[in-house]
Length: 362
Image: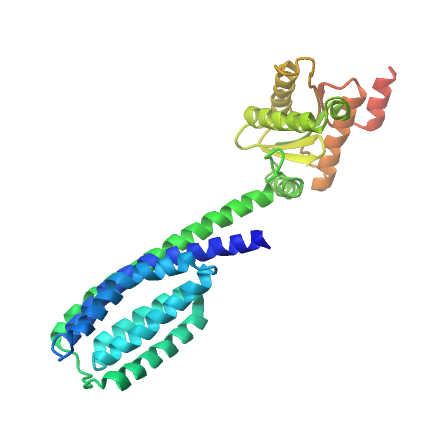
């Protein structure tokens, strides 16, 4: 529960920070509209002091109130309803002058709906109405609906600057959401230990490459890579060392394949690679270089630990009926690499019986 509360407060503080700047700009620019509308009216000095306080001091007090609250999100929503209520009072004090009143109410409605949707919009409009009624009852202003030229010109900055600013803020939020979506999408496709494509996503990509190879009749190879005697490594050195071996192999794989190749973790200690636009000879060359690099790597902390790979690779061929059959060809080749001494690259087409015969010296 404390963790949940902390996370909720973090979101609330982020919300308060997001509202702080629009409130500061909106009230400062909006105060010009109100001041020009109030100027011809016989109001007392304390009204002007209240306007200055609301426009230039309240934004900072509101932010501090939300920041220090045990529930910043709820406190900020209350602040926004307070803004709407005060806006209704200023509309009444201006004698309901049409353009300044509409401009101020519209800008507040824009901020409310951008912050919390229709619910806050309707709550804000109700707060506007209550503020306007209270302002009219308390101060009984002279109603003058017609707006003067001075009021029209005073409202122009608010009508231009504030919507543009809200649009810019919305654009920034959209960019951040897009970035988060991209990160989540990448994480959902990635194996957490190795950083390679995870099993499910790699199988989907294999289907895509199979369809492309079948449709375009182009060369493509798929390979399965197995760490020799990986269980022995885990038993002797522990799973932490085993994990570090998998990470090191994954990095070596990334460093020694091309940008167009698709490397993934097939499961356990098996990795997998799709090599698009690659014939069998080229694929074997790439994988043999990887095998040699891994074989020659020496860990300074564990110099006695040597890693070798068994690799099976299968090219796309027209008789292969689906992606599963293609992968099965690579699996047969991997079996052949294991059964004939390991630490080698073996290519399909082949059968398990072929390799059983070789292993027996037939």
